[in-house]
Length: 316
Image 1 (spheres, rainbow, N blue to C red):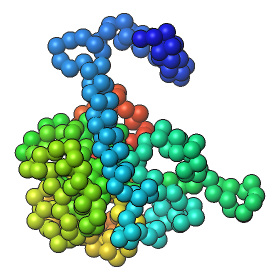
Image 2: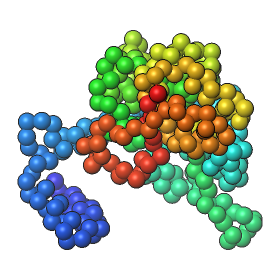
Image 3: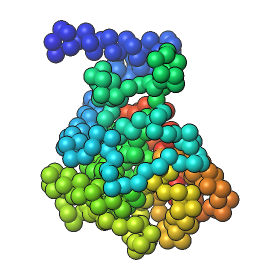
Image 4: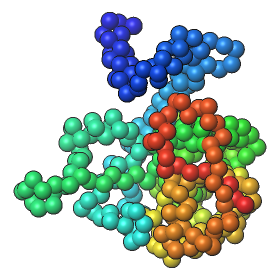
């Protein structure tokens, strides 16, 4: 490491240490002095961290490739997207909302886009005035780090002989995360938009993913109850922008009918909120149970509060 690299690392550590009191710093000092993070017969914390960084780089390469295939906003002209009329995003509109896909752009990349003038942070409430307000950033994909959290913290470590289904797979982010971060035997994406299916197929081919393990199905999920019924893990990103309230309700009653008992459900918003906004929560109260993360030891590698909107449920 160069002198400049050492100084940079030292500054980063001091920024971290400044947030803790003396007793907390003492525990950190004992942990560092023990060198437990880099020794032992099992995989060490340092090796796990390096593996996570390596995994994130893999997903970034996929994202960089996909970026060349799609519009900047990651929205296709052939799909219909409308702001929801209920829920926590009902105040979104074309003036106050900016669509930036988190799988394609992490926080540092978004900041670079802002500096280059490709995206803005604010919009004007009164033209030519200083009366401005922050834009709401919306992503239709999960971030690369969120995907790692799902497979390294939330879900069980061993998914061998399990089938994972992503409903509304769009760019395929969840599929690539499952492929690289888990041993799930079958990974299936269901996507209603043909252009997005083509993008996913192109990425799968480009990065030589095993076709017998990963599959993209072009269909409305409600025509493929066979896939839903066979799933051991289902991932559902918020659907508010893609279906109206009636269709959204219909989809959840379809899921309730066909998702098998014992299946895990991963969602990026609580079911109490999602079903509550649709005014059907009471009919689903006994259908699922919230679960604790299965790999709690790995939480040390994540800023847990950043993933407080990720939920794991099991179907009763």
